[in-house]
Image (cartoon, rainbow, N blue to C red; front, side):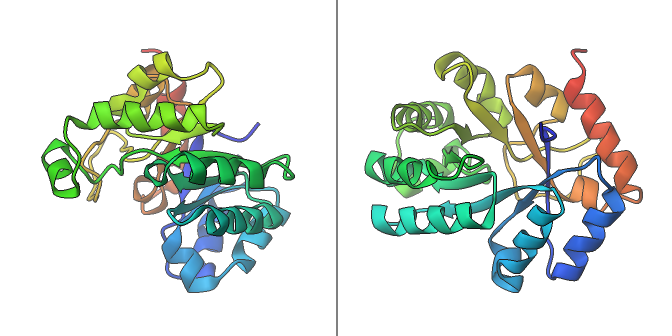
Amino acid sequence: MPSPIIIALDCESAAEALEIVERLGPEADHYKVGLQLLTEVGPDLIRTLVQSGKHIFLDLKLHEIPISVAGAVKAAGKLGVSLVTVHASGGSAVLRSAVVAAKPFQQLKILALTVVTSLTDADLPEIGVTGPINAQVSRLALLAANSGCHGVVASAQEAARLRSLLPKDALIVCPGIQLNTPSPSDHARLATPRFAANSGASHVIIGRAITAAQDPVAAFHTAQSLFRSDA
């Protein structure tokens, strides 16, 4: 069972990413590869990490026509990744195409991205959405569940409501996670691992709070302890 702590490899090179993975050791087995690193180094790094036993969350945030999304999901499955993201705002046809494309790959699960954590209530009218963030997140999460997705990506602020709305086995993956000491972030909707876990998150994504820490191993262990605590 992979760790609920997904470490974001927001790196500029394969060497930097591999150094982080090596330093964190075997206990840290779940990593996010996003658009920056994938564009910088291509898919070979993902193959290397999968072959070494790591679980990879490929954060593609796919938002295209159904046939293109299906093709990208199939390619991700061939790479051996465990999770891939699709924008829920692409609609049910896009979400269903991703789910169908993932079926031949036993390890691959589809996560629907609801509302990116850099947005706040004040930002929604600019993109033509009325109502608060939590209403839009709930709407898109239900669309994703009804389309067969395995889970969603949403901030921890919405996790408790989503846990009550979604199937019991749904994955709820929360970015914007900080440890006890705030660090610079593009996320507007932030939380700690403990808040996320107590709100019903199945996984949390943590980047620089671990990878840029003076002692990344200690920071990883802190994140694990906070996530597992009921205090």
